[in-house]
Image (tube, rainbow, N blue to C red; front, side, top):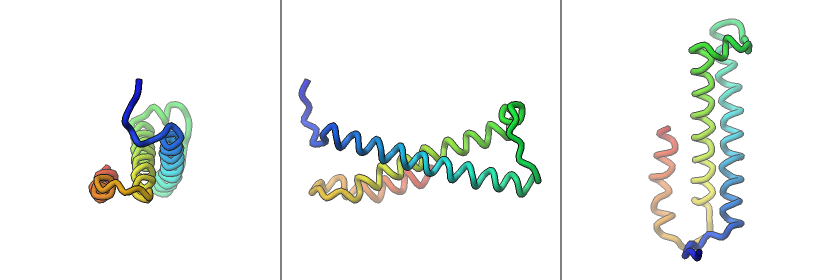
Length: 104
């Protein structure tokens, strides 16, 4: 099966690495900030199984997952924004892509 894609397997792998690293960094940062906020507002930070399965624990996990997804998309968008190709459609769509990623 042949494709007419200008992106090689190595470039796709680099994009995957950028998205994974961006998502990991954003997720860890979000977890730290949200845990710190919870510690300041509630005075305690419990990480027991019953507290994770509570509504507050699930909300924390969902917020961290959303931040990780947003970070991954942001890193991927940034990677394509700083490329040195002559693809005008890619360059024109960067502003919209950053707006959509930030809107998450």
